[in-house]
Length: 504
Image (cartoon, rainbow, N blue to C red):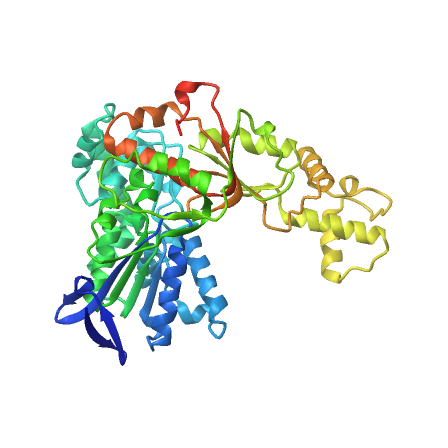
């Protein structure tokens, strides 16, 4: 062991965690935590230690993979440090947000779906959708165009487009000349209209000399960072000689298709801190989860962890209708977006309130206004603001003898029927939805007492997994993530077609 002094405190460290950049000593740590072991909690505890030891708040950076995760981490920290406000800890954000704000950009400067569609028209290719996850600011780009997907993937991996094409041998229909032309058109379009994309943000940050000064940075879900995002972490470390804490789980690295570079996390040279007790995953769930993740054939951090102190239960079903979801919190998961489509329709028919990536199944304002109408009928005097809302809703005279659905205007028949079912089931749309519907990718970081996991694949995911060991490994990681969202009961929905069923 050796020791150094930081902010007047003697800190002991192992020699393999101490790094020297430009003659300045600093520390590196890598927190490795399986599902539910408290990676974020451990990072936030370390943030508190730095604050207690005198590190200025504006010299602490906390970077999460999504804007939502960064916000949740910030709110958790503020619950403990009640004397602070959001303004005091401005660097709880995503790496893209840091670059965006540092460069003085505005959201109208960022490429949108419509811009890519116009590029497609110019290049003679049909583009149905092409966008970044603006709400999350994680830099993930998705499109139905293989050309756009490949171009973006090459850039986040910091290789040429042709190199990426050679790595994607299954994209046999890609024309190299057209690929080159589309790439040039994208660059010309952005230059002409003064636009940038999420990768440009990072690249411009890498090129700037105006790096914020940090004493320490924390990076959560580091296994999901792309190579260009790792370059950003390295730049901050080199420019500011700060301590670096990264946390993640290579077994939960499921964004390789978007350019995530899990090997950079696995190989990150730092003192490793293993977390070994899950507070989420019951023993029976852990057993089948380990059966899946132990199929990984390539580079992997070997880890052991204890499950939650209860057995949990695994139940097999063939249809969603075989499950009673009238109470409790639920997470319904499918492998792909296309497999999600029939689920909202079913839940509405059952009169269950739920949430998807697009938002809640019905807005809370209608529910609230129904309650206000009921109060009026009972001769309760409403505040002016609530009374005004009712007046804006009704389609004629305020006839209190009528039901809300006979009075309120601009509500479809399907909404009326759905809301009536919600009321009958005592569902409350003013509260957080107790049922969440998502792809496995969208649910990463989430958890629920009851998880419903559809085991069916699509033809594309099956074909992809057969292409290489890398694809097989990533497929196993995806299903591992899905299984380990479970806090108690895991419902496995079997496929009618056994050839399209993932084998747990």
